[in-house]
Image (cartoon, rainbow, N blue to C red; front, side, top):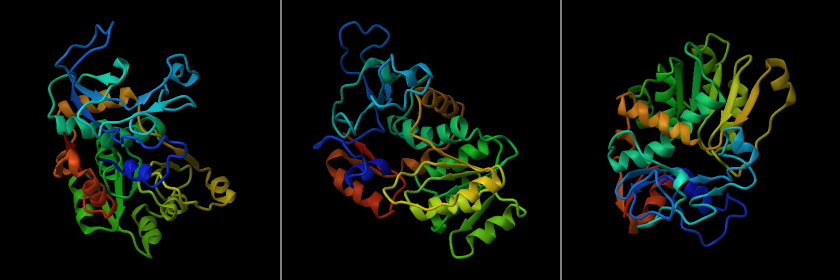
Length: 302
């Protein structure tokens, strides 16, 4: 269960058909194959890629099958994985290189692949750069560990002492409590220059504005958290510092495969994402847990 499920529930995906079965961050086992499928077999473990893009779309040809006007999203546009069975096109099924705990496999597909896509594909974070992570939740916590893995100096910003402690455990070099003096604290932690990259992982217009204010010269700002809130910015902020503001939407199949390889190689932690398990029929209670910030992730077990 992901923050995007809350976003769906609150009407954030304008035009999504209702009613719809949510669930886009999922793993399972292949139970049956359609006619003509030869590269998969019944019993294979499967990580599910939630986006189905027309193979002839311009964006798919560019290697960006996660965007475009004709994509269909599992759990948003078509029924998703809050279910005992889900039907997916064979081309959206990813078989891991070796058997992975199904609970872990599910969270790797989004909670880890999303910040991986944002930092590797979109921001192109480099070793030696400084990264500020705003929001240490289900996505932000993994932005911390991926940033550290890429060799960046990572500053994690959040309000919860528990989550900031987690950020330290996942590789944050500096943790800062978000309060009235946070901008001064970030300037001090970056020798007055500001960070090279800011990844904004919370659904908050206030934090979107903060991300723009704290970015350093030539800074890249990546918005990952989805929100219906507006935010304000001045053109001069971007001009004087030559800032780049980017959105990062989900992930690619390649991101899932690369994250799987890193996990199998022992380079990624997932325990912080798999502590809360609930049976499928408690999906409503799990949504409430997420909305109230009690958990980073809940995994539903059919």
